[in-house]
Image 1 (cartoon, rainbow, N blue to C red):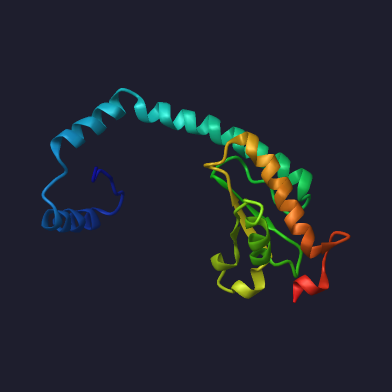
Image 2 (image 1 turned 30 degrees about the vertical axis):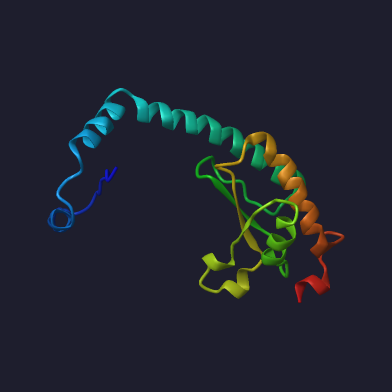
Length: 163
């Protein structure tokens, strides 16, 4: 649709407008009209409310499942966003967990790449829930806990897995 907006200093907006005029003339008028109607008729507000309700149910399901299957691994954030950060015990390898869990159809995002010192944070991973139906979250976390148990012995990281 080539629709969007930027909030910034007046000088930046002026430069961006000049660049935009060089790159494309203007968004088609019908696109502008459709977006204006969508906003004025409450379509955007309705979408945000629907997403809020869906994400809240998924957030609650993820929070409960993590508390049950990974107690103490996740700090429960205030509701917002679409993912949870999880920190495994020292020596835990989230990349190995991602590989093991993928075999059961559970995909996670190892978190080490988000840190300036990835090697020191290989025990972190992120769990997104925006596209997962709430009824599938608990079974998925249960499978993830089973995969994590490959690295754990009596709740501690297995020495071989930590190597």
